[in-house]
Length: 317
Image (tube, rainbow, N blue to C red; front, side, top):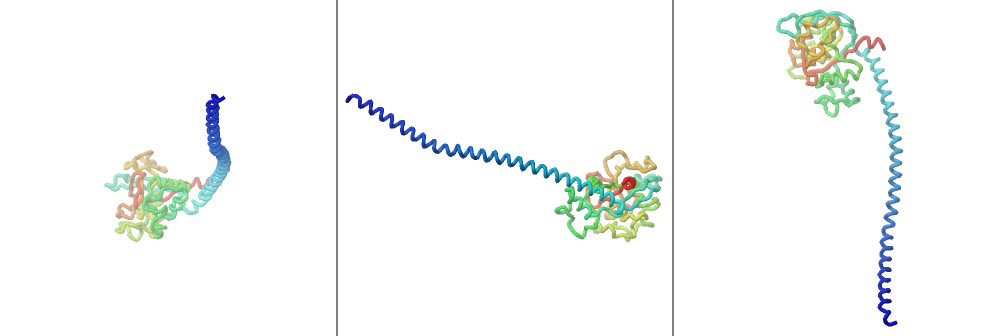
């Protein structure tokens, strides 16, 4: 029996070791199990959050669709009201004939004088003002003129001045928004000169009391500053203050082949026309027959615009 005690001792030692291993295992397992439980709980929580998020997204998507429809309905209503309002705020220019251009030597792009007939249409009584353009910028998010700050003109006193630093593209976008369009050269000149027998929108020669031109200060003036300068058909500031974008492409020889009835300008080109001359021009530059041109992307502080409207569109409504 005395010879068996080493074996018994070995068995005891091994048993103690295994017991220690088992205890350590249970201790580590005890630490791991809460972690596994936490992971499972968190997984369930995340799954619920995802489901809740999907439900919320569906709700938001539905609300967005409803809001989008409301906005579309409001825009449709705005257009309806704009179409009703436009003729009330504009001048009705009756159908008529005018003498466009001149036979004066040295003014090649104005040669020759030629008779043109124009259908009845509407045109803005005044140039588009800063205040009007501000509403357009704020509602549509369209870029503001380069000299504006925080999407508005820098001086409240300029509210009734013509908007400037707008390109031809900007002007067209505004006209589209108010359900109008830019006038053609022929329509612009008809509104300025009636039958085209004068050089300026008023009867007689150049007169500083009738328009803002040859201005040493280089500034615009309110669109209703010069009542003596309005045309016989009632349009203000057709000569001076700011030159005005029109729809036509510019071609220096267009008058040589211009159609007699409602000419709309060339089919294409590199520059767009603007008419009337700005405050910086001399008396020759603000003549209503004087033609000016610039790239459609150009904007500066002496070009603005006014809008026109087909009479037929108003009649259909």
